[in-house]
Length: 95
Image (cartoon, rainbow, N blue to C red; front, side, top):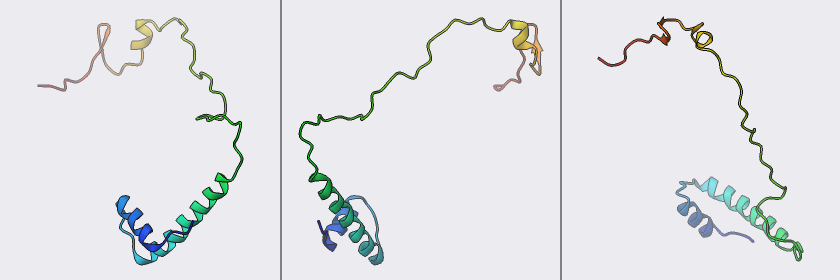
């Protein structure tokens, strides 16, 4: 399907694209080529093929929840730059 210049200008307007004259000529040719490729695809026999949104089966890739022992309070505070009793000591951020 060959697009004419007015159709490309209309598409550019819908897409809010400001195209120069050179870009209009270039995109006119490129968009026409894309539409011609779709015309070839439309000729493919798809009878008996069910519509699908996913071509390969999906599987869950989430890791299962497992209970694991946590660190002790002393291990957590071991690398703290400053601590006070059993807590992290941080600078005040509010007055």
